[in-house]
Amino acid sequence: MRLRNITGSREVIAQSPYVVKEELLPQCPGTWRDIFGNDGPIHIEIGMGKGKFIYTMAKEHPHINYVGIEKYSSVLLRAIQKMREEELPNLKFIRMDAEEIDKVFGRGEVDKIYLNFSDPWPKDRHAKRRLPSRQFLARYHTILKKDGRLEFKTDNRELFEFAVEELAPAGWKAEVITRDLHSDEALMRDNVTTEYEEKFSAMGNPIYKYIIYR
Ligand code: SAM
Image (cartoon, rainbow, N blue to C red):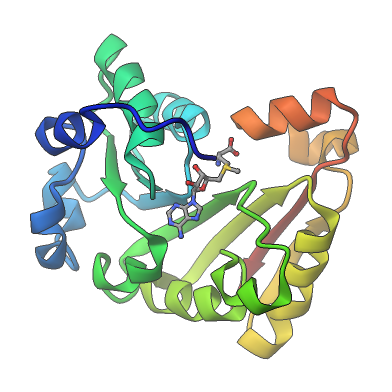
């Protein structure tokens, strides 16, 4: 997702109390519970877009601490606007490229990771940029606690099949795999939709999902 460059978005982000300041990120590993001021679990969404999913999750689960990660300032700005309407103390944002994710969270510090409708990077030579690639799974392995789970949703069949094939070589196992999430009554019971999920399921696209662990 790339919105047009919004003038001043970097400045707004730099001053926002909801965004962890870029210059403080190197000090963050191992301190996330101090940042939130409680011992609650830490759940993160990588590539959160405008933040509909993570904002809803944070509102529904006030005892879980959420961190939304987004590469583009112009997109993150939309999530900040939502927080201005109703602030949630258990939600923080980071503007960064997730390639550096293991420099921002400590070993085993994260309880759950969400990837929703990640960019497909269709060219083979860009495979390592895909968020469910083995290169990213190795980074998630470092920051996710031992019995932690990673949940991934997409409407892109090629990306999903790629993601499933990456599991064994990266040392991960699937707990749940569905190629039609919205027809699965049990999984839909606590499904929170994302912006892209609403758009693509309205077009009739099936939604793919896995939940994985190591
Ligand atoms: N998760 C949202 C949803 O489901 O509606 C947004 C999906 S959008 C297709 C993917 C988002 O991931 C974009 O906002 C993009 O900027 C962000 N993104 C892609 N690669 C990223 C990376 N390496 N680090 C951080 N964010 C990334």
